[in-house]
Length: 245
Image (cartoon, rainbow, N blue to C red; front, top):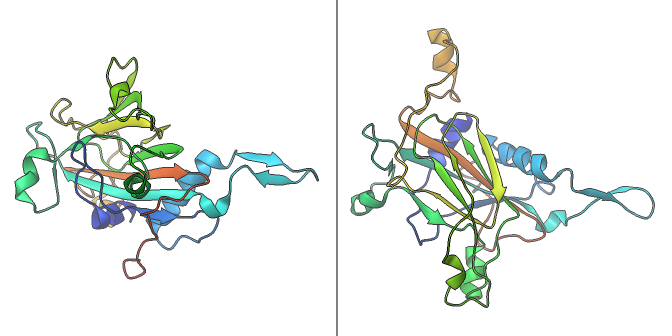
């Protein structure tokens, strides 16, 4: 079910230097999940922040963040993966942009706030990726933060990068990193590599009933992205439409 939901909501690739499409918000402690993806976003949020608890003067537990201004910002990405190792192509029908169909290097941020306050970039506390396929371009994560507001010429982006991570898709794999880091899936430099599933074979009848198996969307790179925000709600993120749920 989760994989099918990802495919249903899968969006365009993110070309380098551009902002992504629509993202959805879910205030974990203020809402009840209405679908599989909201439930997964809730699980991921709690896995990363439930330990952020303290004690008040009366010896009672208290959260170290404001639940009304904290939550999970989530979206899905489904890309077609060619067999020749070329960059993946999205399910979008925009042929004019096929040559750029990959996940360009970018920063995650509150893009709505950035439009109102140029040169001011606010990032999520934690960025996460959950893979629902064994194929597709890997995710490149660079230990490089966005320029501070005072650096209008973006000079701090110059220079060497001392540390980076490369994460290849693997069904069920969950990756979390500092929400300030530069990242993407540059297929031009890191072509798609299919990972063979290590799952044991199942009876045909059982496979047909499973929507969350690695073969459910064969040949596609399927990811579920969740950004964790504390004490701030991105301006342009909103709950999933009721008619979609």
